[in-house]
View (cartoon, rainbow, N blue to C red):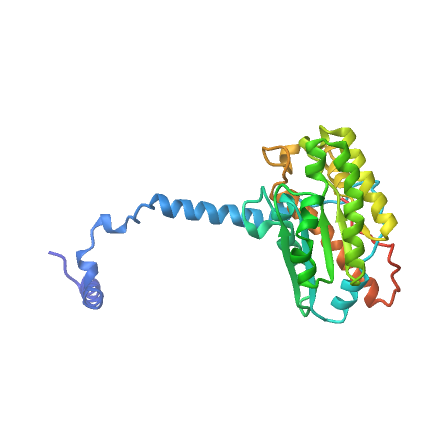
Length: 301
């Protein structure tokens, strides 16, 4: 039998502990083993992990400047001046499935939502609203039919108009030519209200690149209309072409398996470039630069 002062002290301490926590007296080795996670819990944790990974995707795969890409004409005087003055700004993202965000892992990672987050971080005192008016499968003819309700009714300061891809993929040359007339009409209606405009040309992806002649015609057409109407055009086709051909980035790094839509990284980088355009224009306004309506710059890939 053990005795002595040390044993007595330890026994007293143990007795006090069990008195305060009686459950400890009933504990067994099995109680120390954490319960196994169910399938639902594992699925939720996997989804959270994927969302976290997509959220910081540009940290893990940087959106780096490309070489030799020229700056593009155009500016955003209305939205820039309103942000600079801390006035509310409404932006409508108008377009088809890449505006909707088909291919993203979460609605939070569409380009309009990414763009909104970027602008709000940069201009925390501004009330910035971006309304997503994308509808999959559409192009200029279908878009013009919903133009009043989807765009004008929102009374936006800026319209980011993405179009042309579906017409290129369908391959009807007459539809490509007709796009110019419809686009000019839509831009004229926006300009009559003093609304800034940015056109977004088709994405450079396998499904579009396979239609080389149609893609080239559409990109040129949108550029010509932008010059004619004195509005901005963001050269998404050329930016993404550089990702693949100049930077040697495989398509599967920025395009999903359908060969048509971007993945989380593609949308994130595109949104960042577009946001840089607006941020630079605002900076010029704050610096007192009088921005002509045909000068827009963006940080090239």
